Image (cartoon, rainbow, N blue to C red; front, side):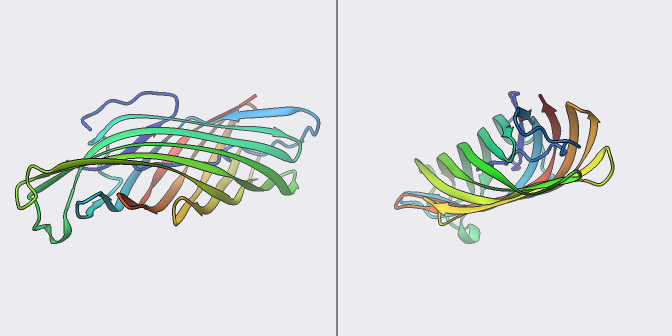
Length: 260
């Protein structure tokens, strides 16, 4: 089997079915030419992210298994995915949210490949980000916000071995933790319809390290509708007495932004 992450906000995906998650700060929309300081504005950004994954995961009492798949192995292993991101702004203040649920089945490898002939890996991941932002730089063409918030992770992993010394062994474990996150997000219009957008977040807490970066270019179709494409990478390094989750996901991202 091959490994891939495909997440489509607001829709359900079904396919023969690793993702260990994601949490974008919704900075996709272009800056309006004029900013109304005393009114709320909102944006909603459904998007598609095709991400390869590499790293190590383990459950209590079993050796680590290694994952290494490119984002080109698309549509192979995802069972189910749901994602939704939103943004609310009042003058220089903003609130950002993101929720994701992903369930994936894939294969992996044991160290040196001698402990088992085949390793099946099932992962269920839920993440939720809530943050607040403040605009520190703004002009008619662009805006830069600093943001801070909390990201909640909930991960359940099942590892099953076939063949070799560990053949027939299967175990599951789960963990929930919270990381404090901080960073920047920005958008800059290079023409009336074309803009650059991106973010960078880093944090820790329950995890030793939690980070998320994205850069992209967008096109403004109407005042209330934009489209964007870019590249995103996310990493998390978490471990406790029974579960290890040390992975990096990266790949193209595209979607739409609705403003109201």
